[in-house]
Length: 195
Image 1 (cartoon, rainbow, N blue to C red):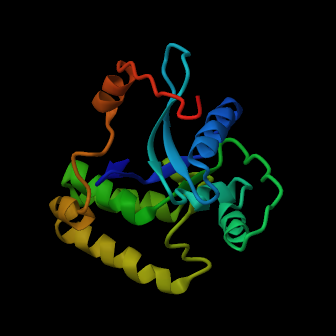
Image 2: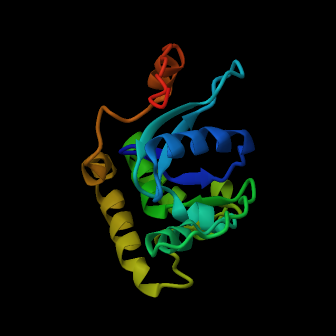
């Protein structure tokens, strides 16, 4: 469920064999802060492809909900500490962004009824939101977060087709199924600068 490039529903996964690749990348960069990459897991079982490397944290809430506190770890590193490695997060923890979900339904369907139906599923945690935790607008813990959520709902009910304009700021650089297939078919050799 996406609009403007962001997924509305996220599920944690464990990929222990990827850790070595990330360690090599961090060592090659002499990196000591936040680092995130997107990983494409080829269907043929070949080595994972690490793309879209960013010097920042991505999805810290889903990681936290699965048992891995990336933010505290980054704060410790930024203070010059050398903290112990974090425990691996639990597999299958689902989180969501309600506003992103509403924008996605509005953009795809253009239907007020579909937007209303999706909002109902978000509120009663049914369908894909069963067992999921809201990331940005947790109404039970932060009553004021209802303001942007209901503003998004009202805008989508007034004009579902305006979702693309509201999401804005994203573009052609985002991955989709076609571009992932193209990346999987590229043969790239990265020289080892230490050699």
